[in-house]
Image (cartoon, rainbow, N blue to C red; front, side):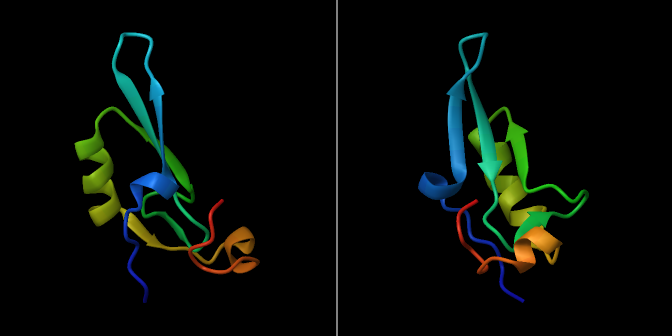
Length: 75
């Protein structure tokens, strides 16, 4: 089993929020998904939430789309 390692430059999109803050979107590379749902992208309010989810909630994925690509390739 290969554990996911957060790469902020590759996997994270930071966009301005309507209220002046930022929104963080974590785009998991092929071969990984979030444990509670078959999704490969999720939004967060803080960078601390992103880091915690990357450590705690990311597992390997074997869905059809991930199976067609090399593990770790950018979406």
